[in-house]
Length: 431
Ligand SMILES: [Zn+2]
Image (cartoon, rainbow, N blue to C red):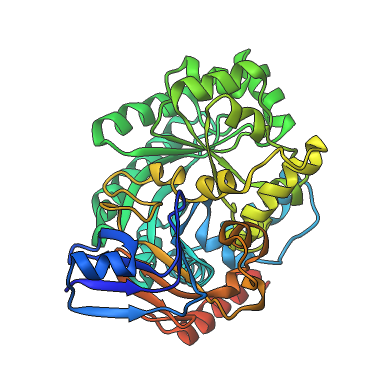
């Protein structure tokens, strides 16, 4: 069935098209984008959706770093520094996780993400087959990885790789929405042997790698003490880096490391709210953009954010660097929107995602033009980046399928997700 999406203002993001006409083919990909008038002249279709005149249609946002099931930890431990927060609060809670809890935590994450305009999550966590199933059921696209930590122990390393292989075999390509990737946690929690094996497997399987890099100043000190080099230099020296690596945070970088990230084509996930909340530092995003680094945007997990609202995140990304540089032009709104859409599309391998262009997957978000935050609409890009909120999302398509309609999930029962995830969260935190 060919579906036409008619009307509204399309932000592709390179073009702004009034009274748009978008055609979605049977394969879930966009086959035509222009004005309604052009579409009516050139094409025909089987079904159509008429948008409000003021509705804004944009590519689905791509959250390039999160830990979906951590929605269950929303609000359990706030206002603490990273290592104390991890050791005393998060890691003990994570000991109590199981597949069922991760499934419902992931369902809650997918519900929250889709309803606030995100159509793809890059996720590193545990019990990832249960997470992948929840994502596919609710209808969100995701790049998943089992988070691996070996702390230099051979037994642990083998166990982690075994679990990664299990999840790869079970989930890679699931429903056309799920891609597997390898997830070594960080250079200070993974041995060189593990990181080298990850590179070998990524090449063999043709999958991405997700890793936390240079999140805190302490991490830089630890890696320097252990390996005599800063984290990015060290990872490059052992051959891990490439354009298939998604490096989260990248807060503490020197000039040479920025150059390496640029040369290797690494996909950097900037997580401004998590970095602010844990007071980790300010990532040199303007410097990275200037040197051609592929910077994208992520929320990180709900324990350190505390939500998955990418519209909130892109505004924070835009504002943080302006105040840090004391320069309102330090970030530019179209570039910020690209970071959360078309630049980030590189995280997904089997489909083109992140733009409303011919040949791209129809991952689309419609913002409600009757929301006061979108009026007046002098500049739709400005309204998206600086004014809109996740609660302005009206419809969402993933791979051409309507998964949020009038602000409600289509494929899953919202009440069931809320009840089950709340019960799992209570089981985790009860003594
Ligand atoms: Zn993280």
